[in-house]
Amino acid sequence: MLKKINFFLITTFLFFINTYSFSENKILFIDIEYIYFNSNAGKIVDKKIQLETKKINDEFSGYKKKVQDEKKKLINQKNILSKEELQKKSIELEKEIKEYNKIISNKNNLLTKYKNETKIEFTKKLSKIVQDYASNNSIEMIIKKDNILIGKNDLDATKEVLDLFNESVESIEVN
Image (cartoon, rainbow, N blue to C red; front, top):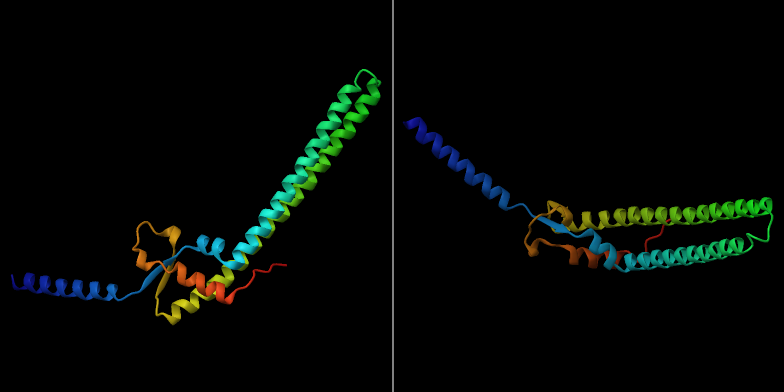
């Protein structure tokens, strides 16, 4: 009986010590996407990406209209042209379409590469700022908000980190 009481007292004591030590840990979370899209540097990059996307879409629309006009012209000449000449022009049109698709695909690939490189550069700069913020404020852990199911709003350090990011990063440059 005495062993059971001792075991109960020791277990209770250890439980309270353990609970106390966890309550001293300082854990915060940040919303990285919010910082990316609301930081000054992130807004500049996002605007550049939107302009390039619009430019590609406009160019694609121009190509599409040109191809449609060429197809209509070819259909209208169907009765006038010989079978060989119609086939030759049709093959030329297909080659032109493939070339347009290749150009648009290359531009989209370059845009995707630029997006990825800017995200990587942003993450590097943000990581350094978050590390400094954590060490200056005695924070043991900072978690991405995406990985949090429920959390108190007073544990959200997004605004503070955003302010620090805006102070120290003017632009995100990639090669």
